[in-house]
Amino acid sequence: MILVRLVQLLSIVLLLLITLPFASPQLTPSFGFWLMQSLPLFLILPRLPHLKATQWLAFVTLFYFTVAVLEISAAQSILELSLACLMLLSCLILFITAIVIIRKYYS
Image 1 (cartoon, helix red, strand yellow):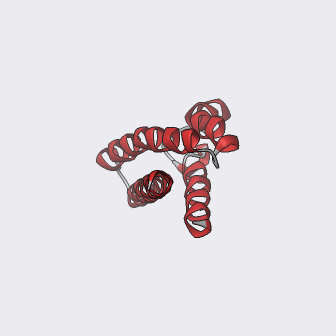
Image 2 (image 1 turned 90 degrees about the vertical axis):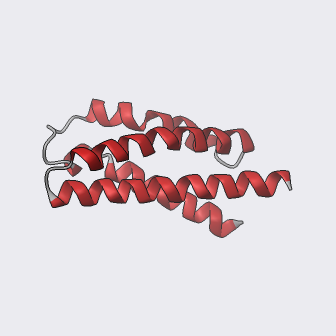
């Protein structure tokens, strides 16, 4: 269970790093835009050991998954495509670990 939590926290950090403004060469860097994108994760992060927060994390991850799919379809360079694929992989790992934690709680 500790390993699952560690993987979950690492994928949250990766997701926050990928959404940094300087990660996409096409956008102008804006701290406000990054904060708006990352605010749901920052709200959930302090209460993450609790079950409700883990359920909300699984729900919020689906929004990041949607953004990653849209970025993959709109990628114009290899760098943008690789960052979007990394974001998608991070979302998948984050969602699966959240579901594993929720399932272990109810079984």
